[in-house]
Image (cartoon, rainbow, N blue to C red):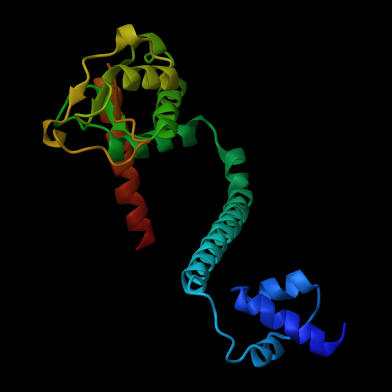
Length: 232
């Protein structure tokens, strides 16, 4: 195309409010933007050009953020997978003794101790931890702890649906609803909407076993004291 004709078309498109990128695309030519800027110097732009550019910039920013979210999510998953791969060997080290140590550590951190309550009581919001705790109890004390003697209670916020929460945790724990004690609603949350939509309340698992409770506390504290001494 003749350069003079091409320049005239560029100016005409610019007068109509086209961006330099749109001009390049429409004319299907590779003209440097610096050249287009030089050709269009002093060309009056329509009044709607400014708001349109703002919308285009906003749209491009949103697209950029969306791409960044996808990229960061992929990088994070790759990083997490490396951590899984690096520590997978630990699963092969587990035996009943290791599981009992894990149970003791979980219980002393999340469970109710003997001085406060007699019997096994542990509450948490994480379904995986609750299920693992039940598994450990039944594995380490199969002659004492069975699924039938486990009881469940939910602690929740005032605006939550109690029946839905009980159904959710019954599905997680496989404890039938007839073995659920009355759900406890935190009165401090009245009038305060729950911000986390995925929050399912606190699941509290109760079971007989004061001797087990004491034993788990003793095991954990033995490790606390003896390993620290060895470290020094």
